[in-house]
Structure formats: structure tokens, C-alpha cells
Length: 112
Length: 116
Image (tube, rainbow over the protein chains, first blue to last red):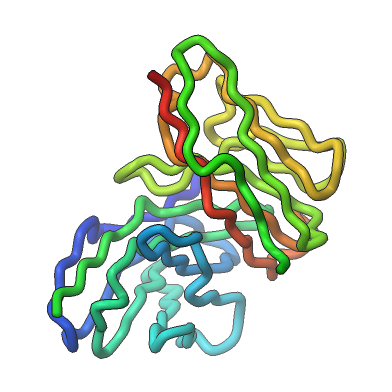
């Protein structure tokens, strides 16, 4: 069965630190990849997505992610985090069907 | 404003009672979904519907039921058969279901159900 792994369960950073959240999936075929973010008390919202083309995808609020097919990875990055980035981040994969498979999430806490 | 509404935001029920969670969307989306979110487990798919009057079981459908009589509505019933119903429930929708892979899902604000 397809699965998505997010190995960082809880990340704590100071403002201006760089961020990289890992996401690996298990599926050998064509995939569509997503990162969603859930800010405290808010809806889950799309941060960025990859369907095809340039494997480096830029999203909202300065986030980017790189699709590395050989590593089955889609890691999320941001060069300099802000306190307002405190949230839970979910990686998700869509394979063939309309179903999204979510990872377990990474809770990011950014301290001023 | 276009979007997805879920009501109520918080819901308390006694053990053994069925409870129905509401999900309405005015985005004219064909597909709708129900997820359950538990700490440390991410989102798990309960049921989804690609079109009116049709729905499919997700990964954790046992103890749940749905209906899709109208395009804009996809209510979820948590039955007494669900062994651990206390959770945060999220509804989502997308333009199309299986026809296209290019559609992102849009999420509602969620309903936190607590069974006492």
C-alpha cells in the first residue's frame, strides 16, 4: 500500500533559522505531491503542489519544495522562518485516483 | 464568500448515540471527502464521493456512514459502532474526483467531536 512518511514529528526553531521538513513516499509510478499547512485555529490550506515540470516548486509565504524522484522525496524548505510559521505541516501524495494519502504531520514551533 | 462550512465546531455526545456532522460547500465542486485527524496520525480518509448519489469507503470507514443527495452537501454520521469516535473531523472538496489528478482539495474548518 502507498504510504507517506514525515520523519520530523516536532521541530523547534528560532526565528531566522532555516527549515527543512522531510517527506518520503512509497510508490513507483506517477505521483502528484502536496504540502498543506494548518495554522493554529485555522483551516488546512495548500502551501504548494507539484504535478510535473520543474521539480523545484515555489509556494506561498516563501516556502519551496524539491521533488527528487530517485529518492521518492518531496522535502519542504524555507531559508528563514518567522514566528508566524508556527503550524502543523502535512505532506500528501495523490497516486492514480482522487484519494490523497497524508503523512502524519510535523509540528513546527518558531520562537522569537 | 465561496467555501466549505462545517457545523457545529464542537460537538459532545454520549457514548452509544449516533451523531451527524454537517458539511456544505458552495464551490460547485463535484467531489467531497471526509477525513479524521488524530494527534500523531495525520489525516485518514473515511469516505469520499465523486458525484451525487455515489460514494466510496476510504481507509477507515467502519462505524461511519454518509449520504450524497445533493452536490453541495455531504453529511457524515458517526454511529455507535465506531469504537473510538472522539476526534477532529475534516471535510474537503475538489473540482473533480478521479477524472483529473490536477485538482487540489479545499478543506473546511473541522468539527471536534467528543464522546463522553
